[in-house]
Image 1 (tube, rainbow, N blue to C red):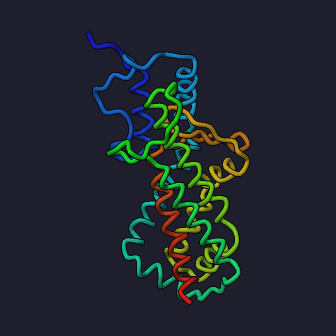
Image 2: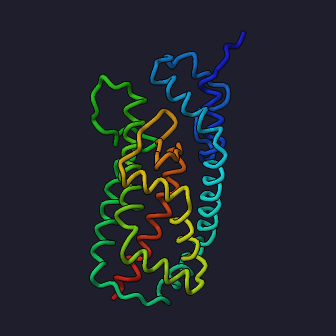
Image 3: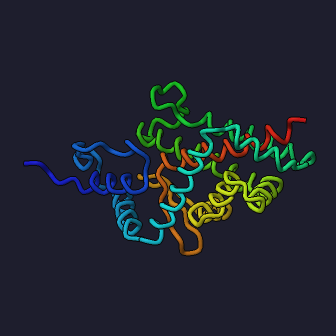
Length: 242
């Protein structure tokens, strides 16, 4: 008789709603059979149940995902986005270092993200931490670093000016980028990072902002970081062309 898999079923429900394709435990894998039901696991389960009942958070997430999908489609023609940036003809000689530093630190943080195919780039963490948890902590840590650089450090200054000017000029891709950075889902994550009110859980990272809570999957956060990097790198390339 097949045993019930409350843990696996809840995680699969979470990743189907908030994750990326193929993220999360596969169907047929009974996680409850080999993951101990500790107090920590039970707290995470209770938190996931609470979050999955939050329709406001789901609406905010779906809006953010839709904007990201529109950006991904728009940037399939990268020259059009670069042309938008060049048309603005922004002058940012004093702030180019800010962008350059952010890109450099963002790249360093990306190198901490473990490769799915090999363990050669895993950090040397204490052996007392079980291997799956070590890998999870490394993934979460790399994402926190990248998100902080992309959403906090690089959000103000010349990038903000570019997004405002592009939106005012009705430039479609820059308008989408501004919508992404101002949407409620991203705004709450940025605030949580700024206030250091975030923590890991078994499903991803929990962000809290003045009573608002969202649990973000690693796959979705990594996808968000990809487009943040693309935006920042494109701005740096155009501003630094002279």
